[in-house]
Length: 501
Ligand code: FEO
Ligand code: CA
Ligand code: CA
Ligand code: CA
Image 1 (cartoon, helix red, strand yellow):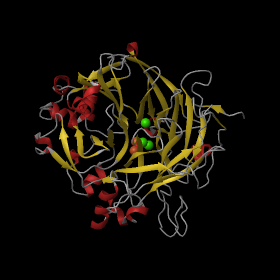
Image 2: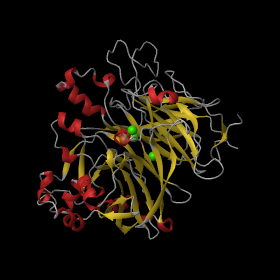
Image 3: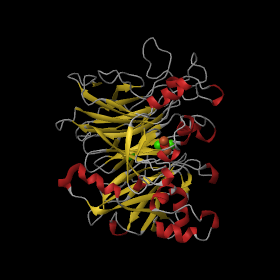
Image 4: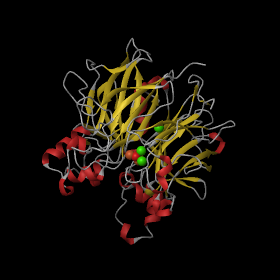
């Protein structure tokens, strides 16, 4: 193999073969450094890095590509973070630990003089955001009766993927919040939102209800041709829909974070894949559809109710059920929109596929679209269960996979071995062809790929290694193989080895 051209700066890599070893395997001449792992101290206050690392975003400090803030989502707990849960019932102590280890971390990372990426625990920015942190609500559901009048709520958890805004803040998505809300005796209408945090400002913590309440996977933000902000979102649930939010007002770069107000007022749309139309999920449209069903008579009294019961509202107006829409990315080259439909065993879509949406006139603000299956999972393509996505500057799509731990390395998933990371060009002669760049440790899922601006470093989370472990004295993975330890830790790595051409 001569290797595979990736982006302008990364040169070539020799694709790897699938493997089932308990290690993060990379192509020749690439290496990884662990910048933070579960329970590592992140700051002078002694706060600890959380569990279930997912989305990452890097914010350069003073324009540096080798020092910046890394924001990481923490999706869920494992036996390694809260211990075994007996008979499916968490103890009071486990409930507290669970809320503590979920949410997000802001840490400071840097590359030292030897080229090794590390965490700087002296950072004044480093902090945890978790299930106890207070958030302000914005938008139509703020203060409504369905939320018992709440204008602020306790905490964030089940933070899966996310996205960076045009004004340099992070949107983090509350995905499978139901279990944690129930066991913590917190009202489930307070979760399932898109959360906004500013890595540089501790006091800025928002939940934007205008973007709907569902099992939020991600956000992908862009601009409509007329300057309004557009946010694409997946709802990772079997037979759930694809959404986009369009702000009422236009983006104004000079306003900086003031643009955040755009996420408080706008229209939420759901995709109908039969008509190729984006359908508005407004009180008027939902009421019209709900009038046909007497059981829904009093459910939708305001736009706040519509966004709160968004999954139901979206189906009422004609949203098409799809196969678990996970991450979405907008191509920086042609404004086409890529969606990972990870799988849906209810319909025999075992390996999933990547859907590509073509907005009318290449305008993200369009009301009509066409689509294709850009790449299908399976033996031939070499990947199964596509999940998170990231683009590099050459228009290559970096795709990580999430075959469930119980299915890995057996049956129809045998050939894929451990979960991995793949690079798929979106144009040119190799369009749609997947080349494997990484293979994760045993029972892990690779999540949150994020490049530094110079594309010399790729941050990547290693989520839930050793996930099926039942007995802490006999873990199924011991990654990252710390000396003297017999346990697995999730963590974030910095991958280097990308060479300038
Ligand atoms: Fe948390 Fe849909 O992945
Ligand atoms: Ca995911
Ligand atoms: Ca992404
Ligand atoms: Ca997944």
